[in-house]
Length: 278
Ligand SMILES: Nc1ncnc2c1ncn2[C@@H]1O[C@H](COP(=O)(O)OP(=O)(O)O)[C@@H](O)[C@H]1O
Ligand SMILES: [Mg+2]
Image 1: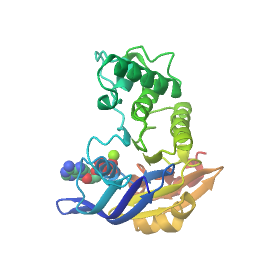
Image 2: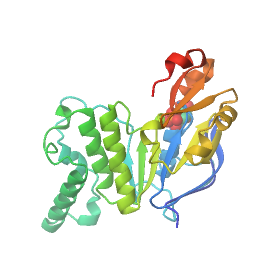
Image 3: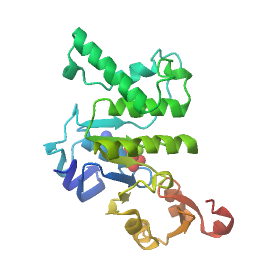
């Protein structure tokens, strides 16, 4: 049974269609990256899977059951917000919010089990040394590792991540990406990873779903991240270059603006020579 199944799925607001006719099965343990410019409907797709948004057409299933809110099969890392100063939440408290209270009950034994689960999730992301400190004192990378722990503490079959590498430095991007990758390998968790920068996760990705202007493509990175496919999606000339194991997407004008929030590293055609950074 697929972890996620979309059939003839369509979503839109008012006159606007974000995407339509989307058929997608994501297997347990599969790592799927969702790419696309701002406003292409990446976050909305996660909200559909979370049962927070209704499809306009078609169906969405999580492990064989219709998408619905409060689904314990799903772990979710929302797009990062900075923790407001003055919020007296410790790292372990944040992780504890991810524990499904009903499952362990409120008795002494339940509380002990809950504590054990939290400690295990904190250790799995290597946060045991700082998890008892207030979140507001932690670096962005430390906070993000605890968000991963919070999403995984309930042992979900599906992990949905919305731009989880945003505003992290390269070392922490790698760390967080590897934590998520390890989890799907050890626990067969299906991963849907929304990102505007594929390079940090390129070696981990099984398939890419690329959304642009109501159109989409699904396939391996080699199938989708090509000059031909991206030129078709953006309806203008786009070049995809491979530079030392990284992807550089080159467009012009308006496409460049769109690519600025999607795809891989990007640069202006006229400045290809100097603009390529590997
Ligand atoms: N509840 C809503 N009502 C109306 N429009 C919405 C709603 N949610 C999202 N949108 C619009 O749908 C588009 C896609 O949004 P979103 O899924 O957040 O895009 P992405 O995450 O790819 O940047 C945006 O133009 C946004 O303004
Ligand atoms: Mg978004």
